[in-house]
View 1 (tube, one colour):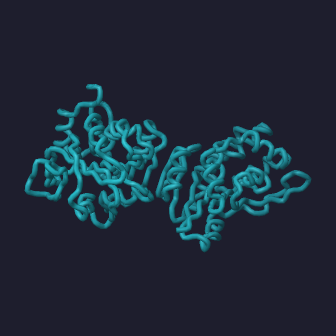
View 2: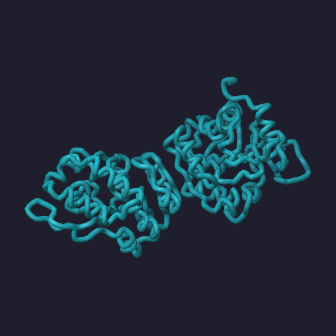
View 3: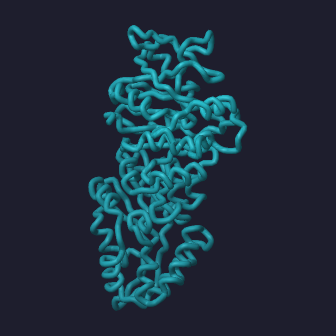
Length: 218
Length: 200
């Protein structure tokens, strides 16, 4: 089990590009909601903060059925603020490194375990995956040294930023906008591959529906 | 940063709402339970409902009330432990009657704000002050850099309005929406409440 104890899931956003009337964390894949898969992966983590905003009541209701001891952090300004704002609220008070993931990410269990095996609460570790989503943030990854040297929108590279990271000693400033923009100031940063799907658009959802393999092959 | 932690009592430190437990003694559990629930939800103003419930419960000797609270009202042990560990900076801000809950509050050993009543021959004669939770929390403001409020019902709204950080606690009841809308955090489990308070 990982030595990282604290987790922040950013699940406040509107998810408008998905064109469904629900937060992305409540989207169903294979009969289960994204947040159910995530909480299943995180079952051994002691302290989970979920940042909620859009349809917060529904998100809390769904999560509570699965796990009662989650701390819900409210971001009532979710319409006008970015993920950095949510992450800043969610991680407030944490004295050591924490795992963060966006509420719209689907990760296969073995992949997640492999990623967490490389993580510790004292060092930042960025999750990257093979480039496949629309509107990706690409990373310049050097496999020889295992670090990323740059985040960029173009040109396309082999890997993209996943929204999964263990963050240690990095201040997330809410005014900076995207989380990767906060990380940029600390480059180069250690990275590890983690095969996952980010569900931003209907096309991303179709891709995940075709390729995602839930634990146990179910 | 010097932080004060201000707790509601019923349903926040205690697992049970105290007045319905007392009402069982005089066969009014259902009635007082319904009144209490409607008050928490903000359907009846706290002051009116509280005075009515006190009047109904006034026939129970104060010493018996204290006994019932001691024997029958269950506590959130983790919350009690947190308060005892941080007793200098913890406050109980409750609309409940001081004379009734005094032994329980002594166990917590922190500073308290309660409603007050006149007691004569071991009986509650009249309620003299119904606590204004907003005023109570404001009265400690100058001593601290930051006020954290923890509560679950409509009665906690004035306390939340004057706090810097607000935690809606839904372990006994679903916290009411008005309170949730004023909150920074919502938690449903005593262990996660205490973990959160320790990190703030």
